[in-house]
Image (cartoon, one colour):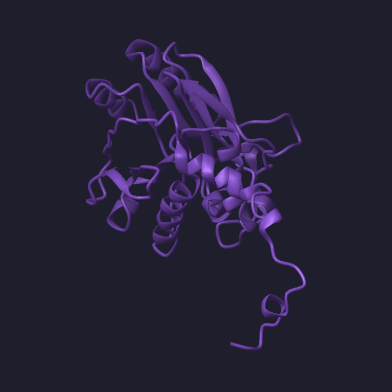
Length: 263
């Protein structure tokens, strides 16, 4: 992570975005108190919280030294007996923890055995650009991304592990669709081994990749300039269309409209 942070700094980036579980992604079978053969309740007492905190502090310190915003996946400890959150930490270019996004739409395994769900969307601004956060398998839920459109975000940072080859293509395709339908940018960040299926990348509001990482399975960065149209005609029209635009134009009590079994 810290090598890639230095690479991003050298490329002139203001913000670097990492995948889900970038600092730690404990396997459900390893964490299972009845594992590894069975998937059961996670035993978080075996987790090295002190080691994680040391790494978080080191990463925050480097963010301050490089003056780069750093968004990365981790696990956030709660008070006992509550399970932790699967989260994204947002560290500013001053090395300060500005906010945290907790995954809300958890998988069956995560909600059954491992994590506590989050409950709010999270936004923050860097250089006049408003970012939103999504995590895990939330790209399957368009309401998450529609909500961020209503919050006037310019770019959603979506982090995932992309653990199965069958999931990665759908996640990436959905990310492109969300970018196009909500007319904002999306940064799609997945673990490097998944790049042989779909590399991490940055999609523009027209729903196409602007840049992607190499597809060789090696850790890498992709850099793009996020440009915002202040007028945003497509977004404004869609907001108008989703309101009551069509109500006065609807036809009532016309047999040619009501009847659906004639040409």
